[in-house]
Image (cartoon, rainbow, N blue to C red):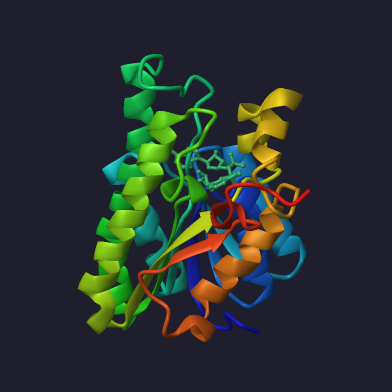
Length: 257
Ligand code: NAD
């Protein structure tokens, strides 16, 4: 098992990438702290892990709140004894996120609070716990849009993911000598609820698909496999990476016929 005796905290564990990663981590031997603001969804993840013979607890937390983030780390350490892997994954893509003219200040602020401040707060309270454990792995979910602008505008989201990528690079440099690796996971467009709610017409879906060399959306399970690599000791020389798992979308400006 690739995460035997490890303790992993996953934010946004109630759905999509976080849900699939929680199940996979538990299958690979990790004890999982499944964090989500959605209690029913997070509890369901824990029940599924336990039904499969794994170890997990649910912690309700809003990652944009400092007190919640401090508590999620404390609860993980007091339940499982330590923390080895921190997956700062919770994020939103607001339906009203648009171009500079049409994006409201409220949508901008909410996106930044969850997507950027949430990662900062996870690290603020998580890094001391990883130090106490003698090191560990942090994976921050950014997006391919941290590298490319999106032609279907979502300015707040794109800016937030750029911030996650650059924050990750600096964190990786600062903490490298403490045996703490920090990588940005940059998924391409996935067939998850988050994206399908945003690309809510066939025309919008096609506009995105035409840019993906593989010609399909990715699956959350495929992202979970990449997170497992970054979490495990197999990636022991990988830090500060812009780890793209994107079906080739950032490699081409047009797709093959
Ligand atoms: P999802 O909507 O399926 O799941 C996100 C989970 O985060 C939900 O369970 C939600 O309740 C939780 N959450 C939202 N706000 C929260 C908060 N303030 N505190 C705690 N939990 C909160 O989304 P997903 O597609 O699995 O996306 C996960 C991450 O991957 C996000 O950061 C997203 O931006 C990123 N991402 C997604 C795609 C995609 O195509 N779906 C592509 C690139 C990056």
